Image 1 (cartoon, rainbow, N blue to C red):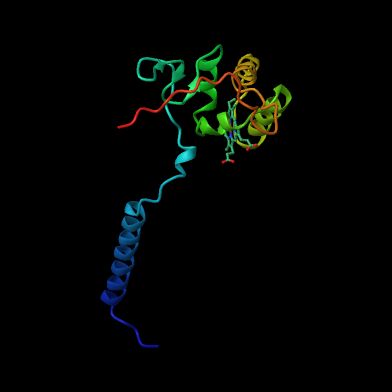
Image 2: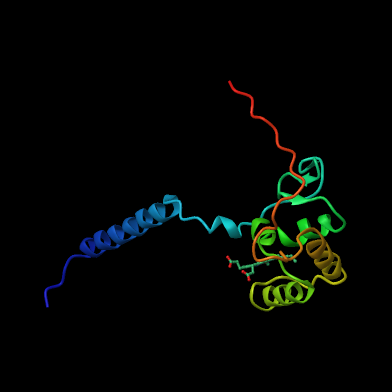
Length: 146
Ligand code: HEC
């Protein structure tokens, strides 16, 4: 076997190290980001996140008893849209919460669970009809021309 001089090995080692460094930099700067729907959002009901016209602006949730608990516990992992889109009864909400606790790392809500489920079923009740009810009592108005 032909023995290569030591500096050949040193050169190879240096090359490997440089390559690893370059790969590290590429990965670090390539903007590989976590799914932003799962990013922790700092929500709250406070001066930075006010309620305007009955709507909590930063989440779009309607004002009501339990809003604070919902904002604190339910909008850190995913958008409030996921909540607003889902119309469920009490049992289904409790089952959904249990599912998130068992599989998604949702914490024990303690006494807040009832408050949250009440808020959801009160403010986002199940749609009763398969289609929208026929509108009644419509006050028609004329669109002004330009
Ligand atoms: C620890 C993180 C976490 C918290 C906190 C959390 N969820 Fe979720 N939730 C998830 C994940 C993950 C999903 C699945 C998301 C997806 O499918 O994209 C989910 C899904 C949902 C869904 C959709 C379920 C379905 O059947 O599609 C609803 C509704 C929901 N969450 C409501 C809530 C409510 C209400 C709260 C507050 C009690 C809450 N979430 C708090 C992680 C969380």
